[in-house]
Amino acid sequence: MAHILIAEDDELLRDAVSAQLMQAGHTVAAAAHGLQARGFLESTRFDGVILDLGLPKLDGMDVLRWIRQRVLALPVLILTARDGVDDRVNGLNAGADDYLTKPFIMAELQARLAAMLRRSRMPAFGGSLELASLGAARLRVDAQQPRAWLGDDEMELTQREWSLLSLLVANAGQVVSREDVLGAWQAEPGEGGGVASNALEVYVHRLRRKLTDSGLGIRNVRGLGYLLETNSP
Ligand code: CA
Image 1 (cartoon, protein in one colour):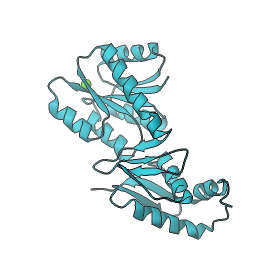
Image 2 (spheres, protein in one colour):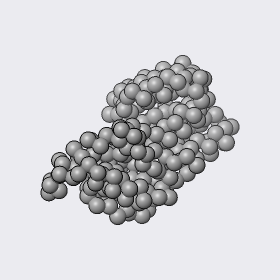
Image 3 (cartoon, rainbow, N blue to C red):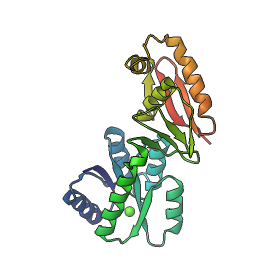
């Protein structure tokens, strides 16, 4: 069972897809336009998104870019018009995981969604979080053990750097406070805690260097903490 967002302005199609997904045991939020979809995404954690590209108020492509700019590790399946080859290509380039052309049959939607959700939970990723960042190497962070990859290359990380990176990834798009990081480090077995808060700057600096060329940056938000974000091109 998964929590799925369907964003589609065609009411009949939206209702049909919602009903189908619920029948398959998923829970569903349905958005009729792009702004509503973004609102849902801001307030709720989803396992997957079915996104029509032609949406009123905020275009589906803008919603997709918004998702990927906030580096949310979220599988997105786009719906496009049959003749919308450009849409498909642009959508995949903008970070969609799969696409379906309209009209489609529900069984195919079910199958593609299931495959997409399965991939995002693949044992190869070992319960890891995956980030897709626009025009940049993909960052994957294992949620259980201190390992992370940029594209195919494993990053060389210390336990503390990994712990900092995991925290930033899990909260991508949001500020992580210094206290949160220090708290996570204190909780680590065998690390002894007691890291001076000014040492944190050193770790952030090192991690920033290791993320060079990844398209991701760590912003220092004065007085608040740190924010993982995609570098503007
Ligand atoms: Ca539409």
